[in-house]
Amino acid sequence: MESHNVHNHHKNQCNFCDTAKALLVGADKQFRVINVQDPEKKWVLTLLKQAGYTTVPQIIDPDGKLIGGYTELKEYFNVTSSS
Picture: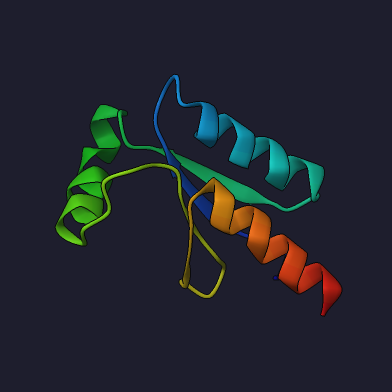
């Protein structure tokens, strides 16, 4: 994974969101947090729901591919770091 512009869609008071953010920081990856509870970002929540995603975080890699939530992010790093 390139070290730029991973998107972390999250909400306030979400332990999995905070843990995913800590994992990205610990892996020294640059990322953008999009808080779906921010009034200006509510459209992102609408898109996620329309796509069938009901939980956060939803992590998207720099190529626009959905990684998934925290568990999938952890697995993604294990796979890519051993490649």
